Amino acid sequence: MDAPARAQIGPAGVRPGVVNAVAYHEGVKVADIDIDEAGDWARREGHIVWIGLYEPGVELLERVRAQFSLHPLAIEDAAKAHQFPKLEEFDDSIFIVARTAQMENDHIAFGETHLFVGPGYVVSVRHGPSQSYAAVRQRCEARARQLSEGEDFIVYTLLDFIVDNYFPVLDRIHERVDDIEDRILTNAIGQSEIEQLYSLRRDLLRLRNAVAPLQDVCRRLERTDIVLIDPMMRPHFRDVRDHLRRAEERIDTLRETLAFAFEAGLMNAQMQQTNISRRLAAWAAILAVPTAIAGIYGMNFEHMPELQWRYGYYAVLGVTFAICATLYWRFRRAGWL
Image 1 (cartoon, rainbow, N blue to C red):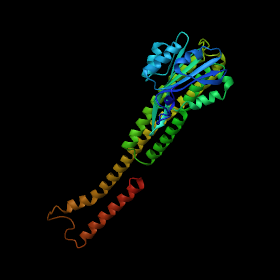
Image 2 (cartoon, rainbow, N blue to C red):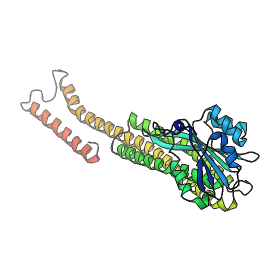
Image 3 (cartoon, rainbow, N blue to C red):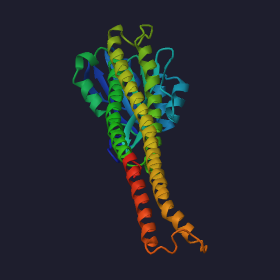
């Protein structure tokens, strides 16, 4: 294959095109191959071809299609990306779509992996953000006996890797949710917290939309009527489905926690507003006493009680202070001040 096509670049990890194209015999790597000879290798007895592509162009996908007689509709889906997780069966092959997820700048970045699986070959097509599948290939090559059993083992390891990468994302989101909860419970909910809550809920909803359909894919892979899947592999896909169910439960729990955090933030804000209103009402009641007395004695009528009394001014001040102090004590005792 063309050497530059394997060059590692940028955060995506690889240059668009062919990442790897390898032929295995009885689970052991025998050669790096060219795309245009992949079909011949796949038709050899006991051989499996595993091709990894990253955001391939239409021309490259057409070359792959010609080698394995892939269905045009599946090729069209793989070229466009933005597909819903699914499994489609064709005459002698299956087409699987799975969504990948990883954290980028405190947000979930989603990608896609498309798998073409048929007799003697597996073609994985990556679109968008995802972890490199080099670790998956190493894992398979280290287990030659399982790899020699067929293409379904490669499918299992790829799906298992994709699903396992959901959990670090959920762990990061869990940390952010805990941080937001602590801030909301100690301070009034603000615009930034509201935006973060809705952003996280939106990300979790998108992640759930990636996880839930993939359970149906694994459930179908457990069925024995899919010829390419050996019945002995059924427990492996059941294990992947169990992991997906755990991920879905964590997603639902986090979404509920965010909803409770939002409600708690609103209740906390309402309580703070209520406390402020109480304080204002209490001080208004206290200040109403001197205001009322001063208003009465400021009317300048000639015949008013105690106007000629020598100690009238001091008596009015004393009564005013006593009433205000009593009101302050009562409000303080009631928790309004």
